[in-house]
Image 1: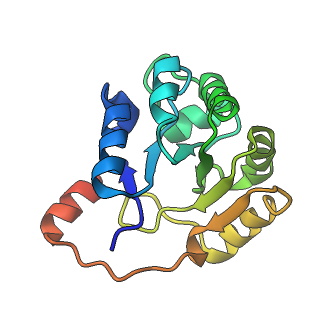
Image 2: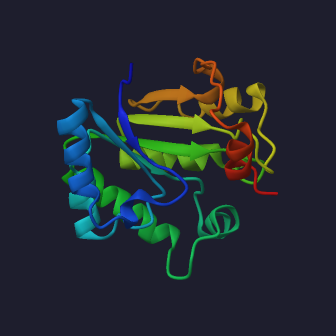
Length: 188
């Protein structure tokens, strides 16, 4: 049984010009709450914020507290800056009545910047903060449970719900086609 309809994937959901309608249809047809996972890059656009506002939960990605680290970790296309990304998230939070979660992916490059990211999270005031490190197959090495626990401590004073990837239940999942799953997930 499904709990949510989630828009995510290998592309950025906010690039779809019909995202709002797709959210409405998913909710009408399936009768489930809708979440959208976004890289946050287009949230400065009013039309994108209006489309996202139709979702019950928006999960906005934030991985860096400064421009240099943002460029190094996220490799954004020209014209996308951390300042614009933060502006979009803040605008969305101020306009949207639904739930906002921040998803932070911790890797070797940003693991020592948890305090700064916690400060940004405090300023944004999301309903939830998701602390992640890559656990599925990818070329980036995950941080250890102990490293992630230290990072989580930097966020413990936030009023938001804090979740950490190592504390989440890990369901048993069997891919329908292992070869295709690995082809899509592993980019070496």
